Length: 186
Image (cartoon, rainbow, N blue to C red; front, top):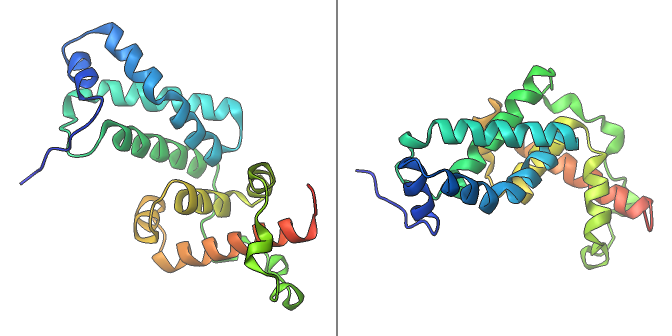
């Protein structure tokens, strides 16, 4: 039995299903910025993110009749956007293996005693550090930490093992932490 979710944009989705062109525009405007950010964090390129954004909405609007309010429209379009980005990354032959991150990027023992509270850095510094991660690690880091997927979902989305997702996330987190510690003010 499928349970319908109360969606604040249900009226727009229903209007789109009825063919209202203005509703399509309103629905796009309601989600475009957030979905662009999702795409950008995954693709790390503004033009590719725009392409993924457009492809996601085209796909969503073509499949709108199949949307049954079993989730919010936002969750549905986000899943489409994430899948579009992952498919594009896979075409570039991103390798989702544990060996992708060189062992030399682990935090050395001298940083183990760093107080976690001391690592409260600006959003820009963290974004910069995330942008310097290897592609596979960045995608997993973003999916887990920012997009809120759990490791089981990430493993399913990327067709990797759950342990690979966890390992890549931990390594990515350590790499970001090391970058924030070793490159002050950047």
